[in-house]
Picture 1 (cartoon, rainbow over the protein chains, first blue to last red):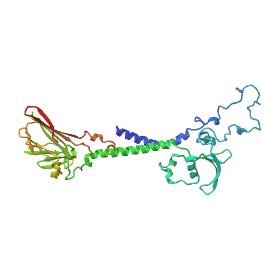
Picture 2: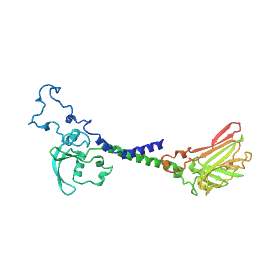
Picture 3: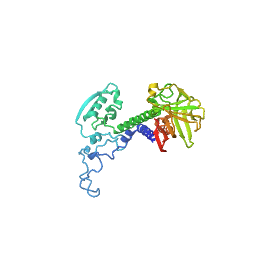
Length: 221
Length: 160
């Protein structure tokens, strides 16, 4: 029975490690599901009239030439609701984590030496600190180790704002990574524990006397 | 007449088996069942010098490849242990049982079963996860001797 449990734990741990859970979780996003509240485009109110027929074309809902079209959903022409990641718009992040506690414009050096301007949205907490580390290019090696909290946070999210600037949002805690890590570490620990336990049992009374050695107290091995 | 002795204090770790004065090594199991009704089994299971298991009748079979070792217990240690000796040629009529070198009389039955937990090293990855196939039984240590008293009652005592 323990052998079956050990093999099952090992298989689950390997499968969980190999499976791209984060990618799958992000891909399933789109515009559907979740709890984005009022930012959803569908189900908006179209005034008091509940039908499109009748009346004139100058109905109250028809935007005038001078009205600001961005008062509604201002979707970029090249973007639709399908594909991409869930962090395509600032609202995707703020809809889940609220309004940033602080927003500041900062300039960070890019890979080729040029400086890029970012709108840094700060929420506080560890994710905020990790975000600044990533943006400054300071990524210690131990951030990739399971014993460091940064291992369980995603990389900062960058989104293109409607005004063309690039917004940066802190990385989010990855429950999937934590689960996988626990499974892997737990599986390894279980394998080691089982191995040590069985090795001790195989030794039998070797702790009391060494079998096959001359001059031992007992004749049994 | 061969002499087969068991010396110990009731624990396998402190039990020595002697055959004609030599301490044996690699013993896995000892089974003695001698009764006045005619039962006569004195079996010894051991791992020989070739690594193979052997099961022998002590008084009738030759102990092939049996391993021996120098006596482990000192004289001082031996004083705290009990010694059971069986001297026989394989027949009940010529069998003498002695406890601590004292010949016993009125013995109805002698039953000894000492067995070390038989655990063998498995091979391969499967052995890491149990090796239960190689662990058939637990350790066992039973040593009893039954006497017939002068009034005809039977009394059973532990040997060690």
